[in-house]
Length: 122
Image 1 (cartoon, helix red, strand yellow):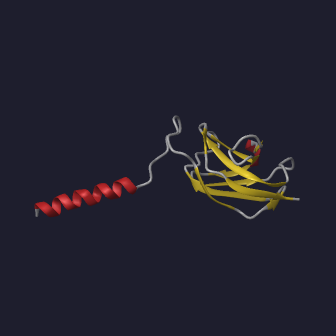
Image 2 (cartoon, one colour):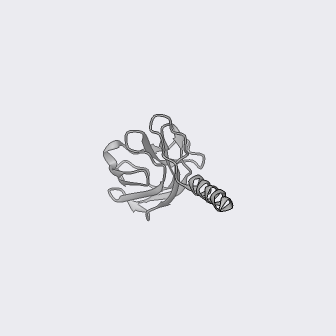
Image 3 (cartoon, helix red, strand yellow):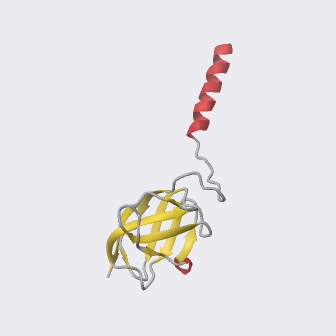
């Protein structure tokens, strides 16, 4: 019985260590992770970003046209955001967004996400 109790505690601890952690808005402690981007779209089209720990529109921003390390590029204006949750961002590609292939990053509370290649069509 004692062995079962200790085994149960170990199992519960292992499950708890695998559970997703909540991201604090004030002090972001988790690096945002991009998982998938929608198909390339033209200006005026829709771009969907899927990931984890993406924060929200008040703490984050989306950068397109950056180099592979996330420097430079075009920051989407707040008016381009259709919806933004911790797992998905839906944007309208503005008329002044750069055309062509580049990297896309999400920045949340000053922390930069992993990057994914994205291309705005003409």
